[in-house]
Image 1 (spheres, rainbow, N blue to C red):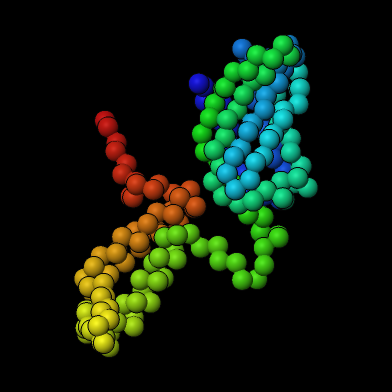
Image 2 (cartoon, helix red, strand yellow):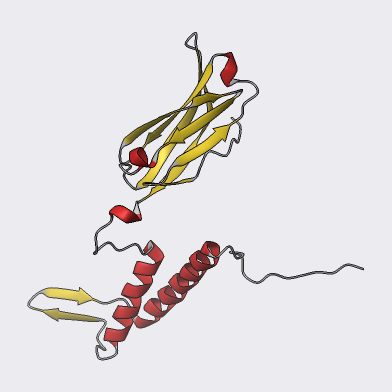
Length: 181
């Protein structure tokens, strides 16, 4: 399998437009490409001939109906005689079309939601000292405070990594410059 840079993220409601140039499978010589996406729904993408290249040009009117989620994909070259080769496979994420979302949609990541939940528990824990108690044969266990603090630190770091990545910064931390003379 080769690396042809199939999009790793597709946004619903936005035109999907990319070219694939495969010298072993030229579009002008009877080859076509089909991408099969399977996940929350089944999506088939058919390429068009553009010289020797394969053009995927899916209009926004079609992508707006894509359901958000993670999909497995298989990119296949198909020859006019029926020969089929798998060129690449992997995972692609389809993001929701913001224009079609309702008022009450929570777009925070898992890490952001979890951090908020942990911080809410810590804030309400100040007056609750018991980690475990029993009433009428029912027991309730609470997460120990030090565990909550450790989890909060973990998820704060995860949220910071997400934010750094979204801003194009290094996800590995500080950049160290070395000058060799």
